Amino acid sequence: MKKILFLIVLGSVLSCKQKITDADISNLNGYWEIEKVELPDGDKKEYKVNETIDFFKIDGNKGFRKKVMPQLDGTYLTNDIQEDIVIAVKDGDATIQYKTTYASWKEEIIELTKDKLVVKNEQDLEYHYKRPVKFSVK
Image (cartoon, rainbow, N blue to C red):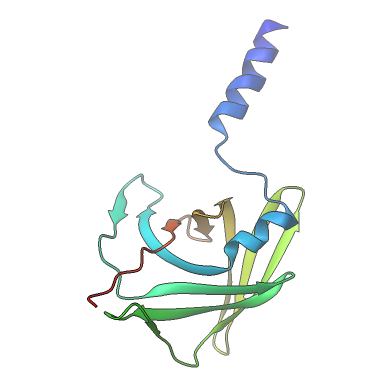
């Protein structure tokens, strides 16, 4: 009995994946800056400066993602290119399904709070995002 309890506790401690709810999805809205990428072999690529930032706009379970470029005056430069997305939540698991004219793909949401986003793509690359800090030279 103690071994079973130990395995249950160990499994829950080692499981770092958050149970995502429909209410959590609203945290996706806004600007996200990539912090690092973890590769399947354990290597990490750190991002100190980002030329582009992701902007998500979700209403219900549908929306879009755009790449925007921060400017020195604190604003963002954007274009008309966007990826349509659908969020699927089932039993605590959530995926972002992307679609453009040229491709479609999905990412699993591992963690989503108001200040942190972690997603894993189909190649097992894990992307860690944070909210960007606005800067200005004014």
